[in-house]
Amino acid sequence: MKANNHNTLIKTFVALSLTATACGTWAATVPAGTELAAKQELVRNNGSEPASLDPHKVESDVEFNLISDFFDGLVSVRNDGSIEPRLADKWEEKESTVWTFHLRPGIKWSNGQPITAQDVVWSWQRLVDPKTGSPYASYLGNMHVVNAHDIAEGKKSLDTLGVKAVDANTLQITLTQPTASFLAMLAHPSLVPVNQAIIKKFGEKWTQPANFVCSGAYKPSQWVVNEKIVAQRNPQNWDNSHTVINQVTYLPISSETADVNRYKAGEIDIVFTIPQTLFASLKKSIPDQVHVTPKLATYYYEFNTTKPPFNDARVRRALNMALDKDIIAGKVLGQGQIPAWVFSQKIIGGVELKSPDYANWSHEKRVAEAKKLLAEAGFNASHPLSFNLLYNTSESHKRIAIAVSSMWSKKLGVEAKLQNQEWKTMLDTMHSGNFDAVRYAWIADYDDAATFLNNFRTGDSENTSQYSNAAFDDALKHAAKADNVAERGKYYQQAEDRLATDVPAIPVYHYVLAQLVKPYVGGYAPNNLAFYYTKDMYIKKH
Image (tube, rainbow, N blue to C red; front, side, top):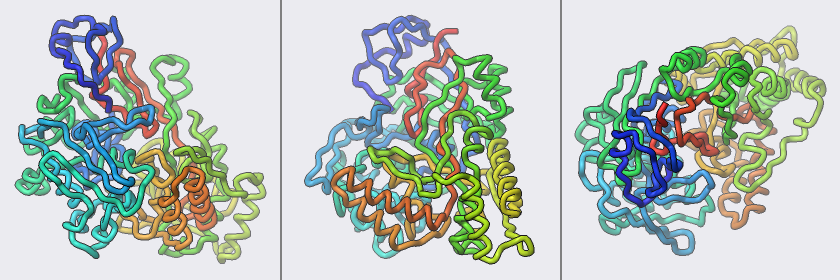
């Protein structure tokens, strides 16, 4: 979300297809000498039909890709990790617990109404309100905003939340303790302000394009379910003069093969992901269009820890040990993915985390220990373990699930019966607890291990495994209070060690982002959370 304060006549450049010069600076930073296309339109596949366009009702990159184009937050994080002003143009803090943010003068909603500090207050109260049922209801509590956890758990009223409007343009946030990642966490899509009047007027229908009011570079103009979402430039956006692309279309294609075929046919400019089966051939045939970027994300299989047999940690640990993750990352995938034995990352937020001891054992030794653990839990050849393994509909997820179930079957005699559901349905299944084991993944919300580990904290709104361990929770509490990176890393290691023993979920691999991007798309630059923004891009003449 890059912003600059120089005014450049973008429409003139686009309409005449003139050459961009160094006289102006653009959010979409166009190199000097670049000739722009007259038609500034982008088509990107977004992988699935979004569950919603309500920032408080969603939890995945599918929706956040859209929300990040449609809404602005107080700040954003640049690709170099520095904090960039967005709706707020300046701020100050007192003892790292009282933060005061000053909104940019004259910022407006897409309907022309002013965006105020009270809009932020109301939006954040809505986020933590138990009646909203947001998957991110715990997020402000994890930032240590005063009373946020208690409000989310229904113990205190909304008006006690530690955020207030000092005046129309000044917002004050009070924390219970200093939080090292506070500004980075503030950039999360769940914290963008939403329009109170519109939501109260239209209720659940406020996200329909005809009713939609937003603050970002783009505003949805058309939503054909399971076909496309089309968005146009938002002329009321405070930084509109620095936007180049006029229209963006998001497609919900879940088939990676169909995605690539439509890309080859010229119907898509950016694919959602490159299927493993086609990666090598595409790398050979069109190497300049294959982009692989590191990504702070972990793919895992989550257990319902309250339901037999997965209320037994021995069973969960046995299944973790029996997977040959080197084969999954290197052979089944083969795009640069890294086998995962920790949930966060080996290196994250300046901290280096060690894998459990058994990660360094030979695969044969791990399998032998897995058999022993299963036997202790009462499972053997005469009484084999059998359960349902759920994944969301995708060719890649299916291939991985087949490989995983085959390993468990051959090594342990375990039967994992594969089931698949569409993305939105699977999320509902997870949150209702109606599963044995389910494929999931987490993309970091910010560059710190807590973004992964909080998902297993007792009572967290994203803790769909329903795992609970007091020692784990204490480690996270101490990490949050740590005043230096080394101390924080010590407690994160304790938390990872506990997960390696209890295994509420099996970390399988750490991601990379692998995409095809047309040569004429400029400004494509994913950050380490794998987000890239339409407002930063432009279409070169071709």
